[in-house]
Length: 102
Image (cartoon, rainbow, N blue to C red; front, side, top):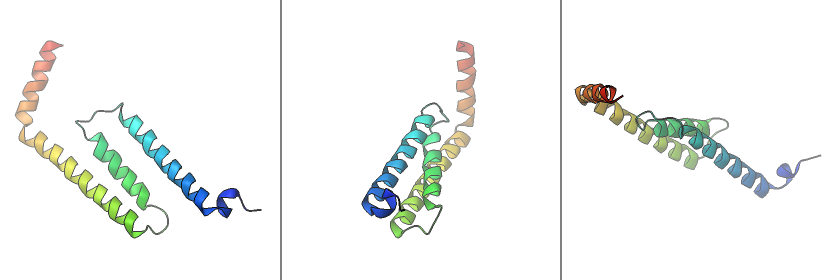
């Protein structure tokens, strides 16, 4: 006997959409406890984009949005790395000053 989600494509679509939103909300709420110089958000975007690409053949819209998310996340992460390299000495000074305060 077919389940309700198998007989009603609209209901199955809505259930999948709600599950996707719930998964994204859970992942975003977990990143609220992590602070990696702002890198947690592009990392999450990359993970969600890779998850969207998994499974059966992704549609063109899914592929293009996931690819855009991966590109933007990579650019953001590379920018953080570049800033840390360029301002390495200033970051060390900041950490030393913070140690003196603590």
